[in-house]
Length: 613
Image 1: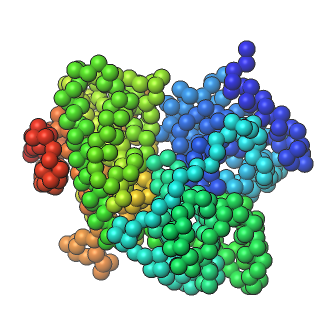
Image 2 (image 1 turned 90 degrees about the horizontal axis):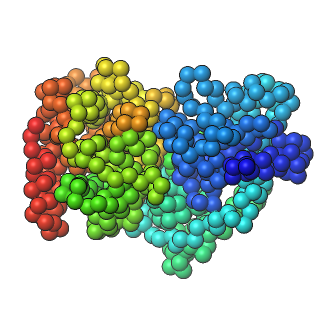
Image 3 (image 1 turned 30 degrees about the vertical axis):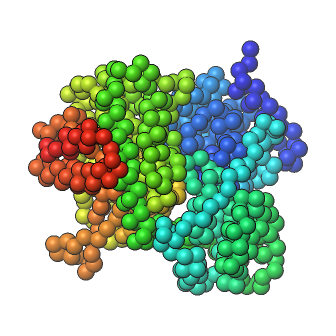
């Protein structure tokens, strides 16, 4: 009997052969994870790759040919993909590992000459399309746009509707800059780049620019939207039903013209045709290829993403807001860890799912909390080795005092966004677990405390976090740090710290990132320590470059479990760093806890867990 996955794949292959949606047979069909805005997390309506593969991770690309179905994903999701894919009809391609070809190389080698490779042009970036097209041409194959998404045809009436959640105003007390101030900076950059029109395609960029927030994507306070910014006009494309009359009036007072979301591509065509042929239209290479096809080649300028980069550098108000959000979040996380220690072995149904829900309930008690910033990774024992594990009814496991427990979570507050991971043992850890934890901690401290010169890209700092693990032949298969938005996406660019070298990834004061090294022993346990940090200036002894050097300031306020620390592995400087951090955590959180009127037992727990090593 055919499995549900194989039936779906056979139906898709029939569509590929039908010649209804392209004038020839589609020999391979590429299904990315993303949506027309290149979002990492997408609304249910755009979860096409999940629909066809049943793989629920946030990263991955499916490729379907006449005989094979393959899924490429990175090291965060190898174990999860193994568990979720139907191995009778799907093959997992472990991206970035030895002997695993990239998508383009695999297709180039395995398809016959003159094959057609199809993809929805709204789901591929301009940069990817250009690179893929060039690669395929070299092997006598052709990348072709399939404007009717074939997955949508299979999904048919079962496909979820677009979200209809209302949009709200992100008040100036939290934004720190008005719409007009932000537009002035954007237009100044447009003048610098000598362009007349800017296409803003990222949903978080639009939200930031217009001081608006929404809830179209779970855990991300954004809404589906595009914008075209010119020197004499501003066009915002959004579902009009999501805007209140008051918001519409506020936007109109800023001279912003509002159009329906579905009219973007048609209005872009009209906008291009109504302007002078010498006008330049600017967007970034990460914008989707469908936009590129509308603008004449001589008028298109691919440039650094203006709004993207402005948004990444937080203003003073946003930084203060992020600090406040992390203080409140610290109270919530401490409340949870304290509750966990008090109730382990006492509550029969204390599990990964119930634990995650309990943590959320503590966050709900905090003022200006909106919702979680991502689905909580609540993982005990071997589930912790699945880097982006999400507990489900099927996988839900009781939290035990006999194994490590990893909880990676965060909250969206009006003031800012948080992301924190703590690994704890509620019983007695083994010496190996303590050594692994301490080496992760050493990497965490090494990165957090490093002093680095201006104009440093994140990749140059990545090995600081890995060195202590490398010393004994250990490592982890994920990046060390990602950018974090301010009441926006928990994953934000261009700032990041990882092994991939990116030329646009300079770290500058005001950027917020995570510091999150880890170690994962397959089918045994997972360890990760994660704080959010902000890039700040710091004077150096000699001041080479005649500029202030840079370092990180801690934002996250939560104890690191001392039971798991093997002090003998730490240097005196590392011990001093932990002690000073814990001293700050206690001073900061105890004030907030007293203000909130928490139980004395929680204050005592905080005091015990922040005592000097």
